[in-house]
Figure 1 (cartoon, rainbow, N blue to C red):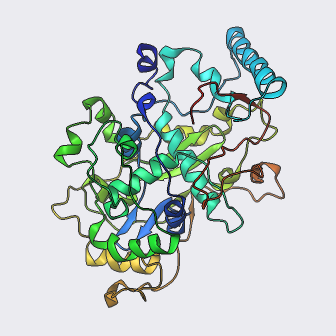
Figure 2 (figure 1 turned 90 degrees about the vertical axis):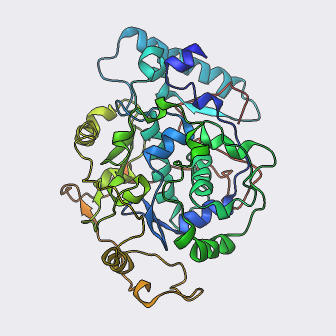
Length: 400
């Protein structure tokens, strides 16, 4: 544990699993907006933020982007990668087990020096993958989803407690562990029921500042708030090939501030679809250098914030959100919706970070292949991680 704490994973090692409600995840996907990486609910825009990662999972959020092995790697680092690949051959090829649990080799060089592991922003890397997966899963042809779904579901329970029919479990840290305590989270519903619950209850019952309750804040260590000043930043978040834009300025009510009307959302351009196939030697730190530069200025990219005495949105914001967003699932027909909140149609146009040259067919932009035996969002019995590619080594932890 002393080494794990040194690496910044002391709290994360305490995380316990719990049953996932795939119908709930599917319902949240329905409310995901690709251009902004936010959920559109009747109450306004909201999303999983760096605050949620820090308090729910206990991961470090500040530091260097997770981009991997540099071109000037030492001989010792290369030997470490070579040993890992030998392990892959033995357990992944020569003597595989039935569980087929594997972990990508690209992370191993980052773990060679335990004293340096905590210098990486693992929290933003987790969030980048989750955003990418929600964007990918909005495609009608996709029936599986990866990413930290435990975080996603726990976020929904803390923000919208009407989803969790059993709510008397004690609060523990990391906060995600609350739902692993017997009797769990209670009854599960179907996707249409979850969607209807969002439409009927989210406007009045969404909890914008769910961690400010005395019972919750009492179990959160002060170390979790060390980098809280960057929770609201507006910058790209990175995990090797994955680059996603983090729009903290769109959910200021989650930080207790007044939400103002926003300009067009930023986008990362063509790298949004880039994959790892055939790029084992690519230095992602060089490939994404302009995005890394923006992340390095994350403190300077914080929006202007004014503390709010009342988190109810202004009439101007409501009218803007109703015209540009997707606040209601069924066009306001299933509930009594005020006339000024009726959806007027339309969607967000995108504001690219900078002009990208038009490109012909690019293999980098092809979606990464997923195995045939990948879990469906409707299958609550098992979870099959994405095992695409050959650069993987087995996970010997024996757990999920």
